[in-house]
Length: 136
Ligand SMILES: [Zn+2]
Image 1 (cartoon, protein in one colour):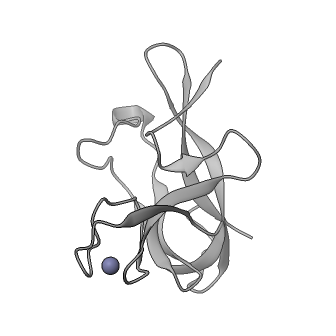
Image 2 (tube, helix red, strand yellow):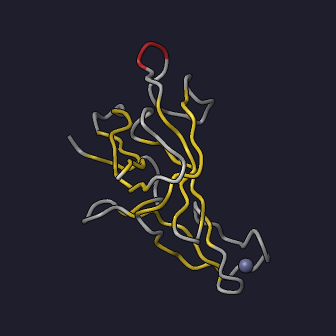
């Protein structure tokens, strides 16, 4: 089975430790995720690709009890399994909204690390993977 990422250009995952691909403004240094073509703070279009730290701290979380609205492409109906979702602060750089690997035992401020997790199987039988944070 082939593994494919859930979206292009959001994470490095084929070699070694995965990292999210964000962008950084060359004018004011703000970091965004996902990458943006213009800066949300100063409107500069000088944005450079910026790999985000793999570890951060849990800032807030909840449990997603029902399938998110489209364009959510994961399992629905009886196949849906509630999952954790939260914001993770990556250094001083950026706060990222992401799936969490678990819904129990989470605490604000705990250390989290990025990993690649299975998301669904596509029509071609490929394993589609996405990213999630797990407690260290
Ligand atoms: Zn800027």
